[in-house]
Length: 84
Image: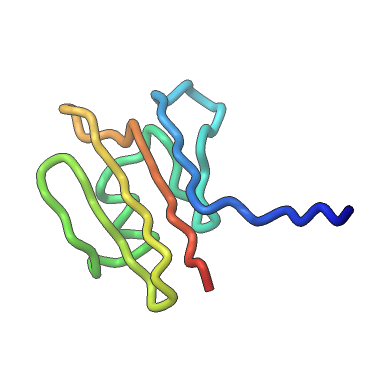
């Protein structure tokens, strides 16, 4: 019997900033509790946005979706990995 494991397709992180402890950090350094200015600093302004969310898509079809609280801080991030 051969067991084949596949990489994760999606990673979903919810939370609030807990001070010095970084929660849900992306490879680029974005984490729960950061704001839109940090998103723009790390990823530029090449994304779709509305008042409470940002969606960034890469050429390989990987998607990062970020949701903000009413005070403008990230409370949710979801990364969909490309299936290629």
